[in-house]
Image 1 (cartoon, rainbow, N blue to C red):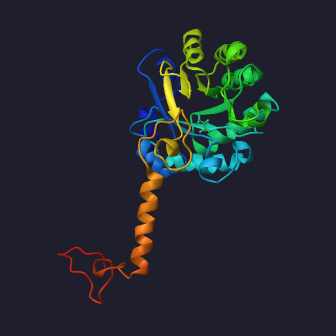
Image 2: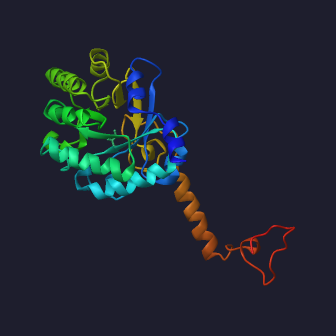
Image 3: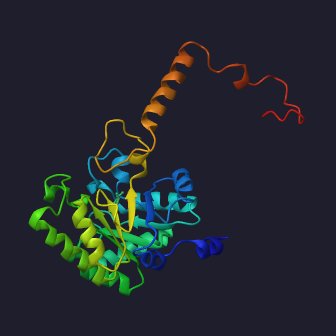
Length: 281
Ligand code: KIV
C-alpha cells in the first residue's frame, strides 16, 4: 500500500525537471482533510511554518517548533497519495550549523515521511543546503521575503527593490549552485522574479512574485478566504470561507435559540431502524 503510493508520488527530481515547463501547482496544507482536497490538484503540498499563524494564532512563524511541524506533517501525509510532500524546517532548527540542520531535517523526514524539506535563506544557507543535499535530503530553498527574518526586515516588506535586487539574484544563484531542487521567491518585484527565473536552472515557485515563475504557491486558507480581514495584494481569493462559515454558525445559533434544531429528522425514536429503510439506529 505505501509502496504503491510512493511509486505514484511526484518526486523532487520530477519537480526539478519542470523548469520552464507547465507551471508547478503548489499549496500549503496542515491537516488530513485539507491534504485530501488539495492532493488531486497539486504537484507540491507544503506543510509551511505558516501553520503557526494560520492554525495556532501566533503573531509570526518564530514560535513554531519542530514538534508542531512533525504533528502537522504526519497529518498531511495521511491525506496525500500523489503530490510531493515538503515540510518546513522552523526557526532555530537549522541556522546554527549544517549538522544541526541535518539532524532536524532527518527527524522531519523519518517522522513525517516527507520527501523534502524547505528552509529560508540564500547565500548564508548555501553550505547547509550543500551539506543536506550531499546526504540525500532534497531541499526547497526560500528567498526574498523570508518570514522567519521578519524582525531583521522590520516587517513583511517587499524585498529586492532597487539595488537590493542584486542580493536576491546572488541568493538565487547560491541556492541553485548548492543543489536545491527548487526555490520559493516570496514578495519580490515581478521584473526581478522574471530575471531570477531566467538566471537559474531550478524551478522558481512564486508567492507575491510573478506569473513568469515556474510555479506558484499560496497558503490554502488565504486563497479560500478563511480570514475575513486578511487581504494581502498577492492573494487571489477563490472562495469566501470566513463569510460562509460565519453565516452558517449564526444560522445554527438562531435555530438552537428558537428550538428549530434538532428537528424530527435529527432525533431518534425508540424503535430501531428497519434494514429496508436503512436509517441510522
Ligand atoms: O510557511 C509557508 O506557508 C510558506 C509558503 C507561504 C511559501 O513558506
